[in-house]
Image 1: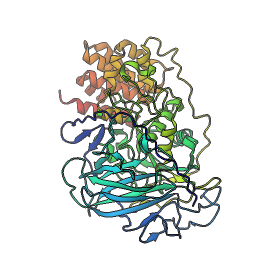
Image 2: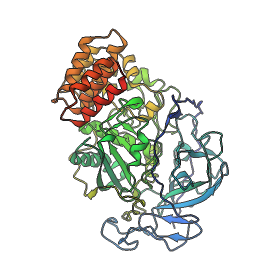
Image 3: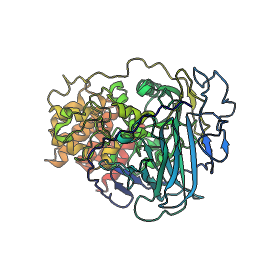
Image 4: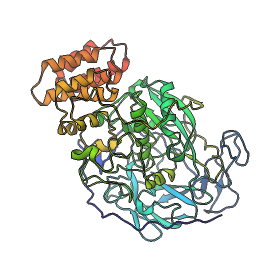
Length: 601
């Protein structure tokens, strides 16, 4: 094996104070911006113990990189040494692109030594409790220390970030996620990983630690293929558009290509997702096709504390090597607008791979990278922020999808794709799906992208002319679950930048030339404005009429329903009765739910 090692950077940013806040009611616990919501956990597939498991359809025969039994993970009928088929243009790789080392019966607080050989791009650590039944007890990665003694993760976080490396039943962390570790390849040696319960209490049960290691022959990135399981809740989006949006967003992203896309359908009851239902909708990925794979769940709307979000990723990083867990995918709302939909999908994949926001809405928190700019105050500066063009800016930036070299390195080191280990090589076959009931769906060849995924700057010459520029930026920009979990209130920030005129917001909602996302948010905000100032029967009546207008795009109607519910519980109940037989079942269910949450008269 050729060794081409680059030392880790020694530059470090000054650490910041990491805050902590607790959620309300006990059902949802918030710590540094992460969500812990109650719900049922899908059965976890049992993994091999005591040895190295190799994925991507490859079975090594040299015995390097680990001890114990080595087993093949090739799908039935695939070949680790053949050529052609779906394993890539260059044939099967000579070494496995992705390997797993597993440690059973890990004791709380005891550091586990993990050997990282030369040629490693990155590692992803996954901690789970070893229980016979699914567990909702918290578990996570408490600390990671590098071979030079440098602490990369401490107290389930990275200082200065809003990172959270624990969750209910499963927790993850990765190297690299900081600028000090973002070298290619990783510094080889022994990395020490410690597990815990996310706090000071001992683990409820013995734990299992799986460490997934991405490698190439020379320690450099050579590309790979992203296999995608697309889940559509009810009729949230059409299959045809979902596939086109995925290809447009991910073909060529950080040097990767799109492999197979398999479309699945889940029940309409998952079309609306709040912080309590987020783990449950992620459980619907159980039995999905192949691994590693990116699960993308399309829903009609986010509600509750996630209202006005357009994407939610449960953890940074999340899990692509096991389906049906609380970290097994990203959840998005798509608007059939290629510009914003590409940003939504790429931004959430950035979180999924381990990226944080370049700067958080909450002052004093930012990513731990050396080559990303930071903004002193996102709320007051917004598009004047030096990192506004970056894809991981909390509003998605200027739609240019700009990334820095360290951000690209972190995504390329992640475990969500089938890798290529040498120039001109091919990606190996995927690992078979998890045991369990198979999800419905059939793989399909990805459609042609149908245009450049790099979006042009938004045209606001018409619909936003009467709004303050920053209000228009927020209405059309990205807003994700990480920001909501960190305490960012979209509507409060919209008011703070001048978006508090109900009449102007209604005008945006009526404007057929405005982006659908902006129309939906504007109508939801108009109701809140009426509720927090002088309640206006005229505003509520217009929102009711817009919600009932079948000519409006569904997201705009849903925004109007949210606006009515915010302004007047009585009006929300009247609207639900009016829409009880609406042809759009999502609209009918949303109106009914909003009325129920409004309470009895």
